Image 1 (cartoon, rainbow, N blue to C red):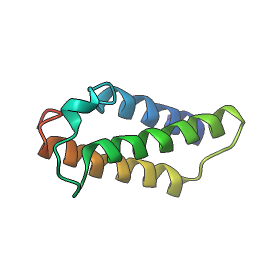
Image 2 (cartoon, one colour):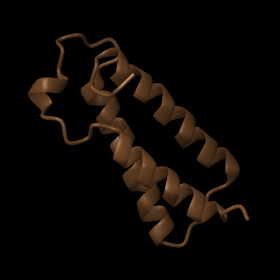
Image 3 (cartoon, rainbow, N blue to C red):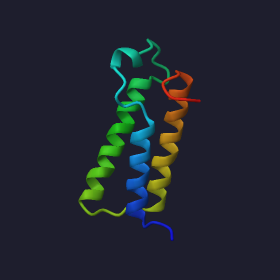
Image 4 (cartoon, rainbow, N blue to C red):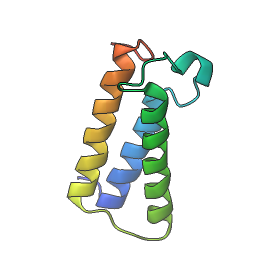
Length: 89
């Protein structure tokens, strides 16, 4: 049986938080290049996830497009993290 949308979004958030290097020290993240800045991308993604955690706790129900958007954004940012060797390839 497929999970409901709230469970799917919570699962996605949990997986992204597990896979992304949110805890890496800022000095290690900043490469001096501002094109695809890993620090800014991680901050953006963290804010998006926090926003959805708040909305889910408030009882909001994500639609499939919102779940897909978070998944797509996370994948793109993950690829940047791979490019800078912050996650496994």
